Amino acid sequence: MIKKNVAIFSGKTAGKLSRLLGNNGSTLPGVVALKIDPNIIRKLSRHIKHFIFITGTNGKTTTSNLLAHLLRSTGMKILNNSEGANMISGVAACLINNTSILGHIDYDYAVLEIDEASLPVILKQITPQMLIITNFFRDQLDRYGEIDMLIKDIEKAIHPIETKMILNADDPNVFRLSSHNKDNIYYGLGKKAYMFGDYGMSESKYCPMCGEEMLYDHIHFNQLGFFSCSCGFERPIPNYEIDNIQSNPLTFSLKNETYQMNMTGTYNVYNALAAITCAAELGIQDRNIKKSLHNFHLTNGRMQLFFYKGFPYIVNLNKNPSGMNVSLSEILSTHYEKQIVFFINDFIADGRDVSWIWDIDFECLQREDIKRIICSGSRTSDIMLRLKYAGIDPNKVIKIPSIEKAIQDAFSHPMPTYFLPTYTALQEVKNHTERSIKKENESCAL
View 1 (cartoon, helix red, strand yellow):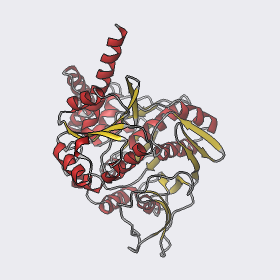
View 2 (tube, one colour):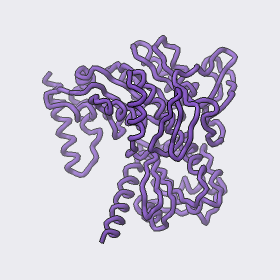
View 3 (cartoon, helix red, strand yellow):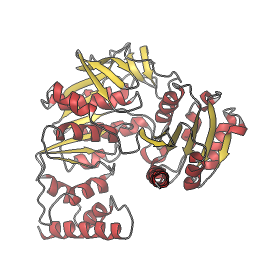
View 4 (cartoon, one colour):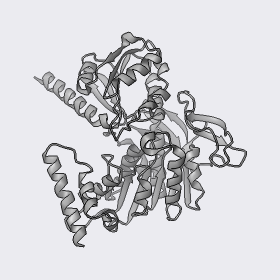
């Protein structure tokens, strides 16, 4: 008890000091608390009856925030690591920040996104009531390693626990986790739901069970689609399947119900469907889900929309080939003049290895409506080189390593703009964008 209380007090104090010094400090309370009491997560989790974990490569934060929003709309008290601190120190920090100095936590559910590499460690301390798995793509190979090894580690961690699995039926990498005698619930998109951009399959095309090449009746994007193998490994029939998607505004139909969202990015239907599936399995009524879904607004840099001098400026995190290819597909679905700003960093949270940019279909940017492309971040030269090999007109490409100056340049040429930062650049991009817009609004008010 003494060690637990010291860990809580020290974690909270460290967090407050960090914020006083002008730092974010989102994980520092957890780092400090874990140093004092390595079992602090297990001890604090006993005060919350239900946990829901969301993991996978892409969509964790949006799905987690959306699910927390859906559950809160019913009056439930929900704990959520909305800022996206999803490693073990981030989970510890979330618990520390929301507990009293005596270790009491008053929430009905904890809805937590969990870093896929951290999931096996956290599952040793907390068994969630539900585990949502979004997808598995290659991401930060220097930290996660190859997908196959990552999934095997997750399989070992899942095997001994009792939990309901909410699985993406369209991803064969996710479906392989269904063979552990759990209560599996599947979600996915129908064949004719939406035609995503076609830029090939960069992930494994081979069956994870027998190694033979899989057959696809239909591909949504990357390896997501209707897959099957002669060994019997094939896409399951989803319990929840979207059969029609419309963009602008993002609208889709599910089980004869129509849902509308105030979000951009058609691929966000996967995140919405994962959250809806979980909420429905918890007994939330369709009418409540529909109303809450329509009132949800992104504020976390995932297709977050700003306006400057009447033009849309969209910020969207991009950290791997699959995510970037989908973002480019969304950008190219419009035909008005636009500019794109790439912010490529290589800090620890991004992954030191930026070779992933060579797996992106930048060749698709050879279009007249792409007027300007700004390259920024610590690996500016790398993205410049990649665009050169992609055959992009060098007169369109601008080198501005400073993130702040790159944003200023983009605002000095007002037009529809897409800011595409990696993880460590995201918050800086959001901060500079918000400050620039605030300054513009204040000057207009004078």
